Image (cartoon, rainbow, N blue to C red; front, side, top):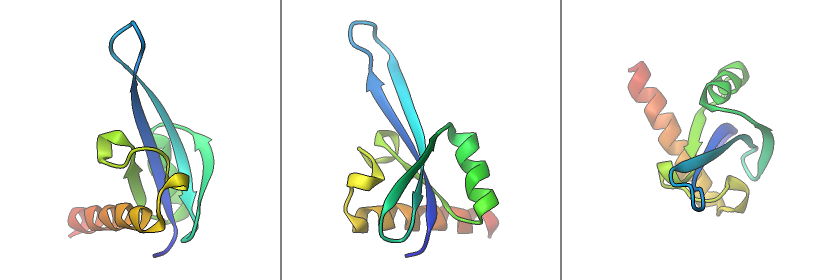
Length: 93
């Protein structure tokens, strides 16, 4: 599986305050490992992926992938990227 940009969105409950806070970041998948690029939102991740000509994979609890890609098995990251490529094909087809 090739390279991809991975947008990580983690939702966490705020203690004693209700609601949730979101930490988000942008990662680069090299084909073997994930490297953190920067903190940023979904739009920034879309721009980054578009400019790099890479698929944008969605990661985090809201998408069924808890934690961060760096700590996940390679097969899990590849499955997430395959889902991103399929989403892109459906949109363009």
